[in-house]
Image (cartoon, rainbow, N blue to C red; front, side, top):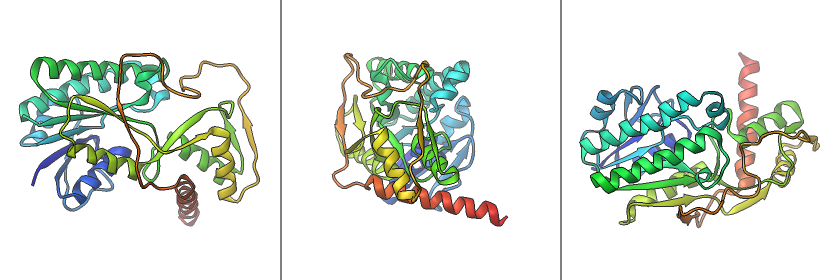
Length: 296
């Protein structure tokens, strides 16, 4: 049974990928600074900081593949804490690369973002670009094979509180209104996290290494379309206010792409969870969470 290490496997995308790997018969070790609340019986948990080279190296011993989801992924947090973001996303990735070299892994799979194509995304984008360059250098000089996994707009169960779609649904369900920081023209290709996890693990079956894969959804929606859908599914009369204040926006509007030599193969699921169903599940989840709070 091939061993796979999932760094950051206690988080949103990492935990779903770990579950999909387990489902497909891999021996999964999760490395994170806190124990996963979704840890399966078949999975092994290693608790440690990303900058703790000794503990991470021990976790990666005898691994065939390493998935790296660790680091700061919230754009606002990266803007507020640039030093911590650089330490986590660049130094943390470098230590993970060293652990991968020592373990002699077949491939290092790095969770990146579509923001690498754009001038947006603050220090989050900058550190992801820097990490990709470092990984390429490790391949060129030390023969460490890699795959970049550039994710689009993810949503679904286990999402962080700052996840965009979760924020919108939570505000609508809990307050009956939505204050949206944008014009409503922004477009995103949303992909359910479970679809993304399946596509992520599918990458292992490809013999090709040392390239990027774009994982995004088949459903492109403007923000205004998405918001109307949320209100309708939640059974709430539409009450939304769009931002009219000029401000520095770290999010792209229509597309993250700007002219750049970076390339990637785009992958979308043939069968996918419809975004309407995904929003319905989020509404049910948030209502359940509210009921639990009131019953305590």
